Structures are given as C-alpha cells and as structure tokens.
Amino acid sequence: MKETKETMKAFVDNVQPVIQEIRKSHNQFFRLEYFAFSPEDLYEENGCMDYQNEKKYNPEHFDGPINAVCAQFGEETGAALLLEITPEVRSSLSDEVVDVLCGRGEDGFMEFIKKWDESADKTVYFRLDHRYYMYGGGFELSNDSDQITPYLGDGLFYIVHSLGLSCLEDTIDNLLYEHGWELA
Image (tube, rainbow, N blue to C red; front, top):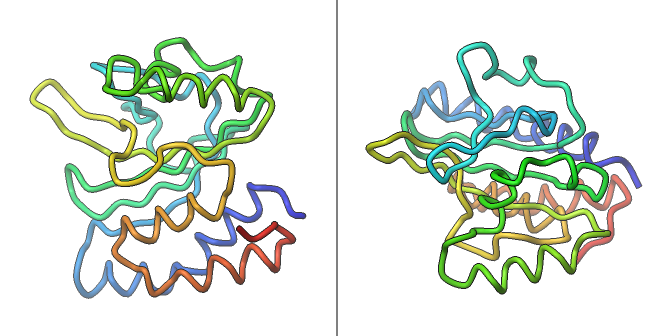
C-alpha cells in the first residue's frame, strides 16, 4: 500500500484537468490542492481551525507530517478540508485545535470525544468546512457527513461532493485500488 501522501497527491494531480477547466470556464476560485502541515501550522481562532497567515498560505509553504487536501469553490466561503491525523501527530496538536476537531461545545461533542479517544491508535480523517463569521473565519467540523472516518476513500468522496463533482467518484476507487488501499 502506498503512503497517504502519495495517494492524496495522485488524487489531486489526476483530477486537475477537470479542476482547471472549471476554473478557466466558470469559477476562478475553484481549486484543489494537497498540503503537508506541521502541527504548529494548525491553530485555533474564534472557535475555528486554520492554517493560513500572512506568510504561509500556498501548498509550497508547508512541509510537515499532516497530509491534507483542500478544495476551494468560493471566494470567501466555500472550501472543504480533508485532514489526516495519525497517532504519531495526534499528541503534537494543540489543545485548542483538538477542541475544534472534537467539536467541543457543540451538540453531541461528548460522543465525538469518545470516537476521538477510541481511535487513538488509528489514523483518522477529518472532514471540515470553511465558515466565515463577522469575527473571522476558518474550518470547523462538517455538518454534511460524519466528521471523522478511518477510511481515506470516505474523505476523498467528501471532497468531490463538496466540489459538486460526484462524476469523479469512480476515480477514487480506481486510485485507491491502484495504490493498494482496501476498498470499503
């Protein structure tokens, strides 16, 4: 089985022709990018998680062990983030970022913290949506699906659905199969 980094990068590269055509013809903000964050890159602000600041915002600005795919489909809002958290990086995340990932303070967060605790020795994928509020913006847990999954394929399906490109679903299964991942 290939590493998550290789599989996520291959997914992003494989669908770039579709993304670029949409960007050129219909939506200049349409993007799909692979990121490699370090735990220090992720921060909490006003109840949301983010990674961008004045000096770091493009994929080439990041080089860490946390694999991620970001899909943007709007100017201010309209972005989805798939974030891989491995057992190795889990303990390096700030408490504030963990609070965002666990939905602390939200309805049902105790159940989510239980899932977080039960998956301590597993790699999990978080589905996050970008929100913009009067006081700022950032990523928070998606309300459109289960926010945490142990299966990369579920996360990639979340990304293509966020982009409105369900026609790319077959490319996910094919890619996972080619990379030696177990299909759900």
